[in-house]
Structures are given as C-alpha cells and as structure tokens.
Length: 99
Image 1 (cartoon, rainbow, N blue to C red):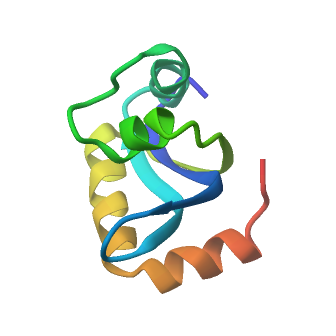
Image 2 (cartoon, rainbow, N blue to C red):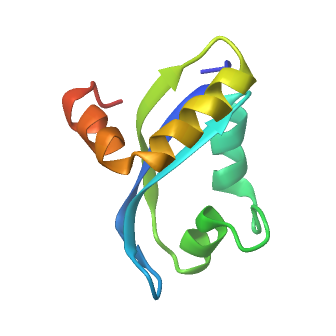
C-alpha cells in the first residue's frame, strides 16, 4: 500500500510497561509500505519508540488492518482520534476486514 493511511499492528505478545500491557499499535504514514519495511529492517526505529522497544524485546508483529486516507495529514488526524478513543479502534478492528 504505497499511499497514506492509518495502520494497526498486532504484537505476538503484550509489550508491558509500568502502566499497561499493549497488544496493538496504531500508526499513520505517508507511505505505509515504506514505514513497515523500516520497522522490519531498522535496528533502531526511533529513540524510545514503541516499535523499537518491541523489536528490542524480540516481540514479533503483524499488520492486521489499514485505513487508507487521501493525505498524510488526514492519516495523522485519524490516528490521533483513534488513539484518543482506543475502545472504538478495537471495535473497528474486530468488525473490519483483517489483512
């Protein structure tokens, strides 16, 4: 998917921190394919980022859902709304078509 959008990643095991245990990651990108390739190949994705920590701990992941958007700005706005309303995002993934 060489276009902007929001993507949902499922972890093979929860990424536990002192505050929560995360099973999913919600992100947005201008080019989803490039972002996922970056996650797969980079040793350090972003300083202290969620996906860097998952990789450091050896937690595997898979793409489960993509919501295409027209622009990268739309993708960022949708990502922010979904992160504010995580229950809605989980419902969307359960009701949506998994990739």
